[in-house]
Image 1 (cartoon, helix red, strand yellow):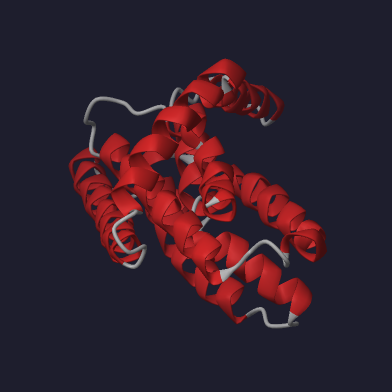
Image 2: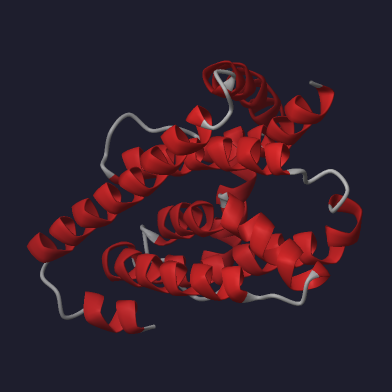
Amino acid sequence: MLGLGCGRLISERFQKTLMMACAVAVIFLGLTGAVKEMLALDGDGFALVGTNCMLASLIGEAINIEDRMEKFGIWLRRKTGSSGDTRFVDGFVTASLTVCIGAMAVIGSINDRLLGDPSVLFAKTVLDAVIVMIMTATLGKGCIFSALSVGIFQGAIFLAAGFLEPIMTPAALKSLSAVGDILIFCVGTNLFGLPHVRVANFLPALVIAVIWVLAG
């Protein structure tokens, strides 16, 4: 809400600069995390990411996750009386992908359920608040509704944590984090206006990353 209020007071020139700053921050966050985790995978990182992304893209395109998210965004836009907001869907999808993708959402939800330790989620909340505030100032109120996406995503992991605990080994978490950071990097390139990557269709990569390690 603060970002929405600020966005109305900021000129278009400053909004574009803010968006570029946000894009740089998201790209840097994804790139540094991905490189760190891939190096920790003892040489298997590049094979993991390459193979994983190709498989995930085929699955994601078959399911058409991105189009489903966009349709949900269009439904939200209509239900919230924002039909005239041309940036609503773009803001909703971009912000949702940014706050949902990544190991912090998974690890934080599992720690909260199994260990009673919400500290990772608290740290993620601070980061999400800053990122979504900046995005809302530039992309509009569609970003605010990413709260629904992250609530459903993290809530589902929290409820399923009892089943996930045995398989979320340190190696599986590293693999998940590496792939998640690559997807965050792609979200940043989309914010920068580079050739659009249908990031939502790569979401199956998060599941494949864990299976890859367990099968190995």
